[in-house]
Image (tube, rainbow, N blue to C red; front, side, top):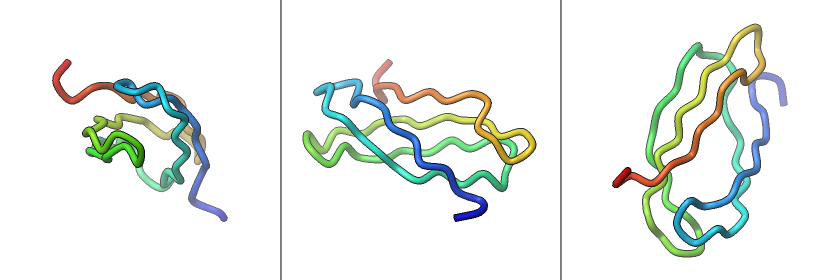
Amino acid sequence: MEGESENSFSCPYCMSPVSMLLETYHGKQEYIEDCEVCCRPIQINYSVSDGEIRHFEAKRLDD
């Protein structure tokens, strides 16, 4: 879908694979998403330029 991009990464706590759709409308996004396996909070940070994700980071909330 236009304006979205699927991104895959590993949970920084349990290392389970995670896949999510990220909006590519905005320049910078930051939010918290719980892991579907271990239910721990993952801090998601990413930036978008020209409709593409240029930087992505998924880290532990307690880092």
